[in-house]
Amino acid sequence: MLSMEEAVKRWVVKLSKWDPHPSDFSFALSLLPSHEHSSVTRFVKLEDRKRALVSRMLQYVLVHDVLQIPFPDIVIKRTLEGKPYLEYDDLRFPNFNFNVSHHGDYVAIASEPVCLVGVDIVSYDVPQRESITEFVQLFSSYFSCLEWNNIIMAGTSDDVLIEFYRYWSLKEAYVKAIGSGVSEGLNKVEFSHTRWTDISAKVNGKVMTQWRFWLFELGERHCISTLKVSIARVHPISAAMSYKRTLKKVDFTEDEYTQGLHLPNVDFVELGIEQLISTLQKTL
Image (tube, rainbow, N blue to C red; front, side, top):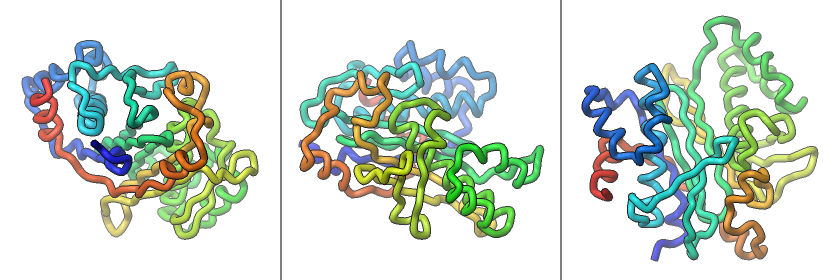
């Protein structure tokens, strides 16, 4: 039987490593349930289609990998806010859940057996239409005074942008974990940290002791980490109402929840798109 630790997954895919012929792309798409096809084909640009395709493939492969559900029996639905959830009763992990994020060349997925999980991935992209200062200023209302001071006092303009992306990624992971939508609640949560470890959060000034956060920095270009990936573990009781209705279990004993909250946080594993295609083929 799979342990709780084995239900904690962190996967990432680099899209540029796959340059499919149109027939190869069509074949990969055909491996997904037909109702998922429009979520991919609605995009015009190939890169956008690849992101959407890989996002869906990751979800099905992960669910099969962890819960061993036959592929045709996997039913993934989404709330009105776009939060994916699994329609399946699993007595071992009644709250097994996952979250996906993509930005630039990467798509990431994370899963948890007890806590709600949020993942956000952001590439280090320098704004082209305005200065870094002007770009960051557009988002100032989403940050607390403490966060904003840490951002604008970070150092060089590159340092300011990196600090901005770190905070932004954490905030996105939080709202994605609770399923509240893209921007709602970003300004309510404040993060503090010790050199981006031991990250803690406050909501409306209250320290959230039952939440945990991590920030991964992957890939380098010119000595700058090009990829920020944030993970949030949040208590199910904090879920947005539309998402909470999909959960099988919201109330946990202190021991049950503490066990889930303090599961080891694993490193990200890079998967190839060919691996996803192969797995989906085998499960059909």
